[in-house]
Image (tube, rainbow over all chains, first blue to last red; front, side):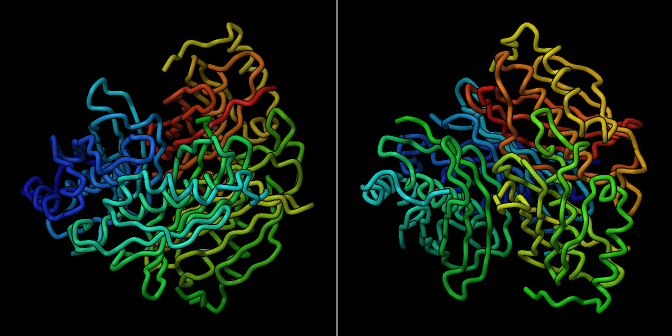
Length: 141
Length: 141
Length: 141
Length: 141
């Protein structure tokens, strides 16, 4: 497995694609850091994103882990590639009682398929609230 | 497996809990129909919920399938039970190019754990865009 | 989605590939029926395949569901294609207290990827003991 | 999360339960090392356990990862507890072209549920051939 980006402009490409996701603005998700094969995001504890017990809805962590993994995979792909999530599996380990840090990391980067791990932690105290394993496919643009 | 609700007031309980999820209002998700062990939701094709290619973000279908499955499980539980998602796995079968119908169905209802299937279809034409398998746990209130 | 086989000799191709899996002989698994996009297998309640409580080991149902799904996908592919399992997720619903019937069915057949559902039932009484969702990829031979 | 075993005799308990799984003898799987919350197994490249291309059948790695995770969870439980696999998800990363080392590690140990990670590597060269995420439940004996 190589974590060498194939496109020297991978970082600006990821920033542009992230900015084009209206869903991330709606959820208030922001990029914390980017590295080849690794993306870290922040998720606010927004009152509009709760389930009935006052925690962040599981869908918020799922959406953020999916996005972090998608761009972690995207960072290693050629300039003209598109990335699609094939599937993901997530375990919810603890309630999301506050803002989150979400990390997506490439586990295996193949020609067609990429496997990533996604994790969500409470921003305060770093409690592990969700972990995921996802498969993505490279499509031509 | 029984699909008999244990709580005669299960339907109003599900409606109340759904109304208490601010995330569902933020996504514009509404209940289409409720039956014991089966919940159907609608998801609009909202411009605020897109990924970079203009499709609905995968997180939207994931959040809606999680909610549909959660309430399908909830509908069969005692009046004072809470339901928590343990884990879910979803395959994204086609891009979400429009509004969605999302169905959650109980596959197995055990004393502690419930297994549900979630599916998302385009509202127009009924193309199958996502399928999921999820495990939920009954917690006391 | 089409369930039309592309290779008129799909059935003998599946039989040959199945016969070439020594693992299936070791587990005593046999083909019950084949149709395009659907494979049904039988699994004996063999004393050599148990876990510590005397039930069939989960690995037996997993191996049989993987094989049933692999050949269900294979049945729809061109004559020279190979099929590889990308990933699978399985819920174990009840202990495997006897011989099994295992069914693999194609849910979505794409150009590169195929999504299948696998299910295992007790041969006597048809209790549902496991369900799975799996992704497979078509590789050239 | 604590990785302190609750039963001082956890290691002999795991050895006994492992020895009681006839499936492990049939597959030739052996314990390499045990620690609280971590189990490492070896899997031989047995001719009776192949798929049609001559690689180890995916079911072998699945069975071994399930067993490693089951005993990793078991090692942290009270003396009279039983452990059952609720569900697992595995990504197959590369063909199993030889003998395997398989590691199960507890990610989160809760009162009722335990989440484990399973990984399989080629014994020679340590190529990562499979990774999994699994949920287990503690039942009384």
